[in-house]
Amino acid sequence: MTTFSDLGLVAPLCHAVEAEGYTVPTPIQAKAIPALLAGRDILGIAQTGTGKTAAFALPILQRLAEGHRRPAPRTASALILTPTRELAAQIGDSFATYGRHLKLRRLVVHGGVSLVPQAAALAGGVDILVATPGRLLDLVVRNQVKLDAVRIFVLDEADRMLDMGFIRDVQKIVTRIAKHRQTLLFSATMPPAVASLAATILTEGEFERVEVTPVASTVERVEQRVMFVTRDDKRRLLVDLLKDSAVTRAIVFTRTKHGADRLVEQLQKGDLKAGAIHGNKSQGARERALAEFRSGRVQTLVATDIAARGIDVDGITHVINFDLPNEPESYVHRIGRTARAGASGSALSLCDADEVVYLRAIEKIIRQRVPVDADHRYHADAVARLHTHPVVGKPRAVGPSGGRPRAAAVRKSRAG
Ligand code: AMP
Image (cartoon, rainbow, N blue to C red; front, side):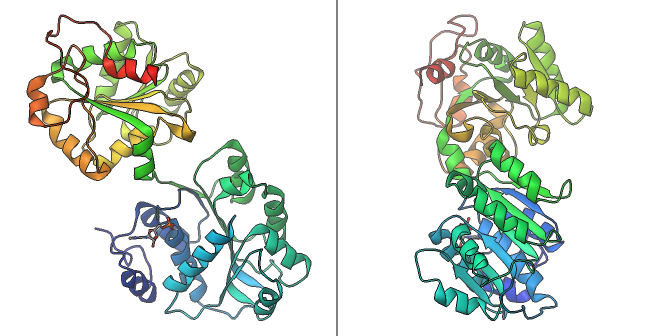
């Protein structure tokens, strides 16, 4: 198990987080802290609730404390820009909490309150300045603060910043900060406007992209179903599912690269357009498969977990777990491929007898039961009985050779 000290944080910071009751770093902390301590730029795709504040505040505190120099009058060494007063206040509190054993000066400035005390506090210079864009620009224009000494710059909630119309203010602020700096950009979503902002402020080709899926919200947005089936019937069930017209763009996950290739061959034999993407494919082959999938020429992409990580395709209607992942976190990453940007989506999991244990582990981390769809002609009651569930569809009496070819889960998602 990784600890905060394993991430490279010094004792005063580890003590402070322990006192807050944090024992294990969250995924974004585990990924971002070492990179930030090494001085790298970061593009963080994460929402509030993921622990992102500590992910940037802890390494910033450490870097400023190392070889600390007193800031010059009317300057700041680290600048955190955030869209709202509430967030600015919260971030300021977090810096105070985590930095309580370090002697660093910090200040929060935002609109809605008098500018005079803020200007007075800036007169002696601060190590950490947390600000909303409008008030910061006001202070800059009035010569109460200069930004040329900023060594670490954080743009928090970039998507909200743009939604709230702060883009020009942000751009004006950025031009006043020295080019030689460490930059961190956080955003919950990555619309094109944020991507192009990221491209202008991060060090080209040198930044690290850190993406975390907020478990709760993904799980809530996606309509999930599990279908109990024997291993032998999985492929036939998959073909039925993919033949439904509601499935316009589907990612099918397999556990192995080999399994992905085999499945694509079988789907193609069944006249379904499918491509595979996994680590054994050349970069060119992967890009071709992805381009065909994106353009809609190919309806189904069969992928392994690792290969799917870099895929950024909108409008995925269905995520189908042909194999259930043995790592429960992968389930959340997989189903997060659908229902992006507020859209709805379906995740269907084909579960055979050997995978019931994986399903249990998944249900534990998502803290809910995945509803069962028994309304398909391959429903395996013996597998279902291995895992007692509240059943959504009524099991059919017909065996593998009877019944209609369309599966209920697909029909439901078309209606919804
Ligand atoms: P944030 O995403 O920064 O708004 O943080 C969300 C909440 O998680 C805050 O209340 C933090 O105090 C808390 N938190 C951050 N990191 C951890 C951790 N490693 N363990 C437990 N709680 C944490």
